[in-house]
Image (tube, rainbow, N blue to C red; front, side):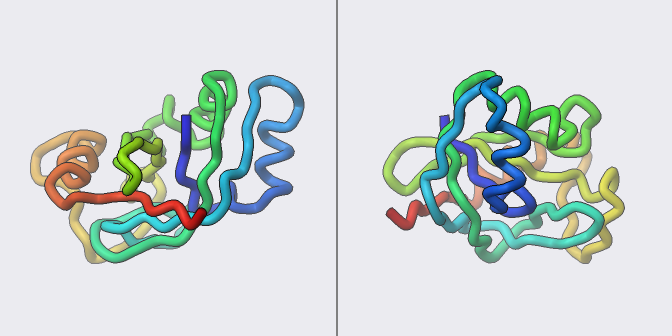
Length: 135
């Protein structure tokens, strides 16, 4: 499975400290660009609609993905993990942080009356968001 990362997980030492102890496997697949979002920095980075974001692609197994979910606070609602199509026809996992829970102030509005994760998923489909691998 592939995961697009755009924050602290683009740092090889951070990824190694999180996933390199043998509890799951990972491989860096190199740089990639996410079209349809832009990065907003706060205490933790997150994404908002529109623009592009440079990052990295990681290939991970299920155990490594579980560790990434814990690191990103998915169980606490800090981030949601969503599926984004890749330009080559595959798909990539992506973490998007809930700005309200992360204390990120930005002028973009994510949701109407939908839960945050549903609003993000709807945006991905509606706006043809895609990940481009820079092989």
